Length: 442
Image 1 (cartoon, one colour):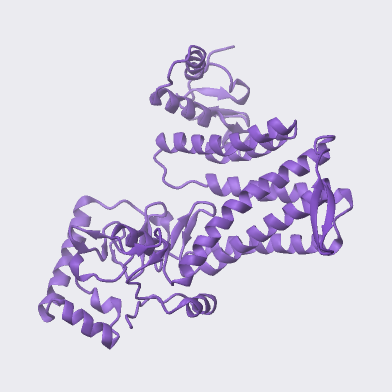
Image 2 (spheres, one colour):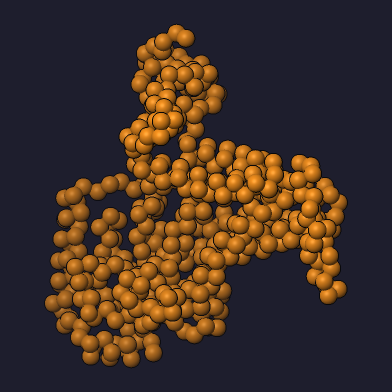
C-alpha cells in the first residue's frame, strides 16, 4: 500500500479520508494496516508476557483515532469515541453469542460486564476526561435492545395478552421519560459544567483569602460556638446556614454534614467553584460543579442526583425494576411450558427446549440478561429507600461513615438532624423537596 502523505491546510479530504494522530492523510479502509502497538501486544500475548501500560495507551489511542465513519460535512471521516462505540457493539455481540448454547450463555453473560469494566478502567487510565457517557450508552443500548427483542421475538409467540403488552410498553416509555427528566434537571449551583474553566492558583488564593477575611469579620461580631451554645441553638431551632456561617471546629460539628472536614474544620467554601456551599450540598468532581442536596453522581444517567431530580430518578428506578421482573416473567412463561399454581400464579415449569431455534434462544438469553440487571438495580433501589426513610443523602451517609456516626453495618445514621420519622420522611420526599435549610429541631 502507498505510504501516507502529510496533510496540507489547503488539501481537501473526501468523505472516507482523515488526518491521523501523526498528521498524515489516511483512509478508513486502512484502519487495520500499520498497527505496530497491536502487533507487539499480540506477540506478547502469544509468548505469555505482560503488556505494559504504555503499550495499552498506544493501542487505545490508535483504535480511538481509527474508529471513524464516512463524513457528510466535507471535513473528512468523522471520529467515533471509543467509550461510545464499545458498548454499542459489545452488548449485541454478547447477546448473539449467548444464543449458541447454555455454555456460551454463561460465558457471554459473565464476560460482558468484566470486559466492560476492564475497558472502562483502561480507558480512564489513559485519558484526561473525567466525564464519559460509557455507562449511559451501555444501559440505554441494553434496555432498548431488550425491549425490541421482546416485541420482535417474544410477542411473536402469540402467548402474550394485549393488556400485558400494553402495561409493559407503557411502563417502559414512562421509565425513559423519567430517566430523561432526571438527567436534564440536576440544576447545579453554577450555570453549567460546560462553562467550567480551571481557575488559576492565584485566583483560588485570592478568593479563599476574601472568604477567610469575611469569615473573620463575621466572627468578630459573634462569639465562638461552644457546646452549650449549640445545645441552646438546637432548642431554639437555629438553621445550619446560621450555625455554619463561620468555619466550625470538627469537635463542635455534632451533626451529620455533607460538607467535608479537613484540618479539623468544617469546609464551607468550594475552591473549585468559588462559592460558599450551603448545607447538604456537595461538589461533584465529574460534573465539576456544586449541587444543592446532592445525593450522588449516577453513572447510568451521567448526572448528579439532587433535590431537583431525585423523585424522577426514583421513579425511573422503580419502573426499571418492575419492567425487568415483569418482562422476565412474561418471557420465561412464554419460552418454557408454564404451570398454574394455586389457581393464580403462572410460573415456568419445563425449560428443556430453549435452544431449539434462534427465536427461543434469543428470548431466553434476553430474559436472563434482564433478570441480572433487575436484581442489581433492586439492591440500589432498596438502598435508596433506606436513605429516604431516614431523610439522608448518600453523601451525608458517606461522611457519617467516615466520622463513625453510623450503626447497623453503615445503614443507620446517628445524629441525623433531618430525620422526622419513617413515615413522615417518605411523605416529605413524595410531596416536597428535601429541606435545604437543615433546620435543627429535637
